[in-house]
Image 1 (cartoon, rainbow, N blue to C red):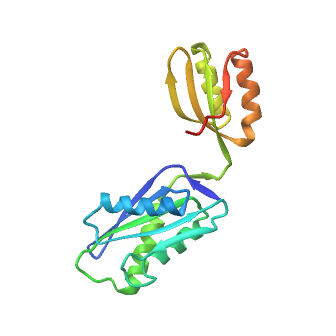
Image 2 (cartoon, rainbow, N blue to C red):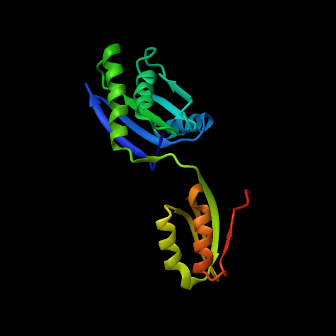
Image 3 (cartoon, rainbow, N blue to C red):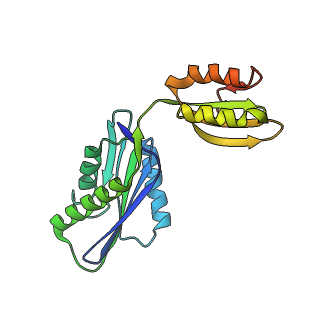
Length: 200
């Protein structure tokens, strides 16, 4: 399965109706509900905000909604496109501004499918990999070497804090954990600390 690396957006126009499609990372169906609710705050004058979401390691959980468009003309077509993409932990919102011309059921299905395809074409994805979050603390002189090490292990930096020493919070594929520990200890001559962050 694939996951989104970042949010993506696409816009299409069909007979003066505007469709804005937004793909966002989303981990749970509860989060999907929140994202839809927030979209209404952001686009209060939209005619419809249709969504389709797929979550879970194997993409086994999903939800979609026509948001008052005729049944199965909006959310389901968006969902079918999404399902065929092999992407999980994602929600696609299609925000419609009515242009004055009715599209008919076939036209709606095509418009919502096309908007979803368009945003997925713009989306950057990566393989779904189990990752862990770690805190690193070390002296300034090791900074460049540690950053190079993290890059080589496909780690991404979540937070950097510069005080008396450098603190980094990173996300790292689980498979690279042991290699990181060993290399980090060598680089910092055993003076750096590596820990799992405590959950507040």
